[in-house]
Length: 302
Image (cartoon, rainbow, N blue to C red; front, side, top):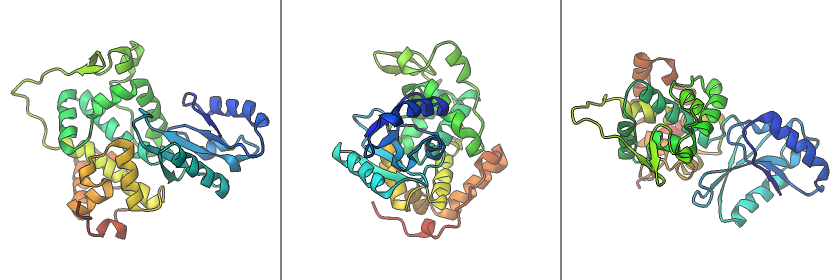
């Protein structure tokens, strides 16, 4: 098994495959660790696409148990079974996903990050946004997460997925990147970092956060989760919830996005999105899938 893990550029990856493919045996599998580029697009240049698939690891690799095993229409079933077996052999949890842009985890995570950065650009302190997300149950706030992943990585993935998701990149990242401030790895991004930890500015006691900030951050994830379920990005709601929990840390006690929608009531959550659409525009418009019967199943008692 060969795993390609170079930077996110389709042409550069295909150039690597052109050099590699002729040197591989007839039983060797080729995979990509791409986090956002559609696997079918990468497979087009291959003579043997049936032995090619995505293996999307999550950072930090040593701590994150999930690997997305990304399919495309020409993938051979035996090759997929070998890919799943490889993941289990290295003590990882394989999640078979459709090869649409962003796959499952990044497709759901990116709207959350972009909306949070948009709130930051509107003047909401990052400390406040992170606190609200942590209160909801996220293991790390979105602004700290963007810095930790790297603003260069966040910008690259966001730029790749934004057109597909009908979103725009918010202001705030490009000028930091131009100044060489990529986040934790440079010691400065949205926050200043010292000894591996962010220095979060204190917020004045009189600061009053808007009541809809949590909804603005969290509901885009729920909306995209519904769209992923409707499109068959994963086999069922339970796999989707497990994948998002293990891939993003989504508030585990809430059971995942679909379980959370069930517990809140599908009509209530959809109505919240419609209200946000009226206030902030079409990026909050409910995606296809809110009429799925799976959303109206009773929530599992956790």
